[in-house]
Image 1 (cartoon, rainbow, N blue to C red):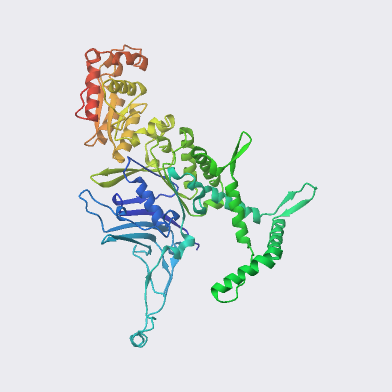
Image 2 (cartoon, one colour):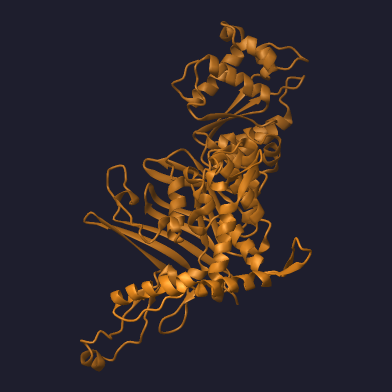
Length: 567
C-alpha cells in the first residue's frame, strides 16, 4: 500500500501567547482563523510551519524566551510542545522509519522547546502510535562480555530520536505567506505557486513529444532537439580552447596546491540541472504587459503580485497531478492588497485547493473571506486572562436560513463574526434606525466592535444566534412584537422567539419593538419605516419625547452594549 496519510490535528502547548490549544483539520474544508489582534492567529500559523519543518524556520532558527508562554503573573514556561498528528486508513499508510528491528509507523511530528538558565533549545522528533518520540537503535546491543572487552572502542549499543528528515520525501511542502512578504509568497525558497507552475511546465517541456515549426518550413522534434542541443553545449564547453588550454589547467593547478594532490575539474551540466535552469528561467520571466511594456513580476507592486498569486493558485487547482502532492498553505491575512470582489474570488480558489486535497489555513479580518454557504471550518480565537480559547463551527452544520442570508448579503451576513457583540435585527429599516440613534447619541458601535446585522426575517435570527453562541460571541436579538389585528401575537413570530430564548446565555438578550418599528415611530400603515422617513424623526431634538416606546427599546439595546451607556 502506498503512503497515504493526512494531517488530522495540530496540538500547541505553551507556545508564545498560547497556553494550550488543539485544532482538528478536516479534509476538504479550509480552516479559517478569526479573532481580534493578539488573539494568537499568527502564532498558530507559525507553530504549524515550525512543526512541519517549513523553510521559514530553517536550520539556523532557534527559539528565544518570547517563544515560551508567559502567564499574567510573569511565570514563563520552561517548555513548549507543538505536534502535527497523522491519520491513515491502514498502518502501512503512514510513513515509517527503521533501525534494528521492525519498521515503526510515524503517527506525527513534534517540536519540543526547552528554556533553562536563560538558554533556549529545541528538538524535532517523530512520534509513534502512542504519540511518544520514536527511539531508533542503529545497531544491536553488545553482550555484557563484549561491553567490557570493547568499552574503549565506541562500539556500544546506542539509540537516537528519529528526526523529520528521515521521512523528508513524505513530509508536506509548506508555504507560509505573510502580507508584508508578498514577493516571497511567489518565489519563497524555490517554492510557492509560481515556482510550482514553472517546475510543472519545465517537466512537461522536457518529457512530452512535440514539434516546432521553423522559419525555413522544416519541423524540429521536441524535446529530442533540445537534448541534442544540450549535449552539443556540454561538448562545446569541454572543447572551448580558453577553457581547455587556459582556465582549467590554472584552476586544477591552484586546487592541487591547496589539497596536496592532483585535481581534475570538469564542466558537465547534467539533465537535472538543465531542468532546474529551465524552471528558473520560466519563473523569473513571468511578467505582465501594460501599454506595450513587459514588467518583470519581481518589479510589480504588491497589489499586482497579489493578483498574480491568486491567478497562479487558481491555475494550480486545475492540475490533478499537482493536487496529489501534499501541500500545506498557511496564509496570514491573504486579503491584503485585494479589493472585495477578488477577496471573494480568492476564498473560492482556496476552497477548491482544499477540496482537491491540499491543507489550507488562513487568518483573516475580512468578511469576504468567510462564507456560510461553502465548506469551511471557522475557528474564533479569544484571549481571556492571558489564555487563548477557541470556538469552532463547521459551515455544513449551519442552519439553512443563515446559508441563504449569506448568499443574499455577502458582507453583512459575516460581519458579526469579527465583532465583540452582535445586534441581530429583522430588516434593513431596523438596522438603520439603530445606527442613526447610536450615531446621534455618541454610542460608538464600531469602536466597541459591535455589529448590527440584518437577518432579513425573524425566522433567520435563531440560526445567526446559534452561530454566535457556538463561537462565543455575545448577542442581542431585536424583533417586532408582531401583533395581529385582534391584538394577539402572531404564532409564527412567537415560535421563533421561543427558539431565540432557548439559545440565550448569560451575556445575551432578546428585545422587542412594542408592536413594530413603525408603531414605535408613529408611522401609519401602509407606510414603512424607510430610512427616508426615520432619519428626520430620529435626528429631531425631541425624539425621546416624541417616540417614548422606541426610546425605551433602543435604550435597552444600548444598555446591553454597555451598562454604563445612557442615551
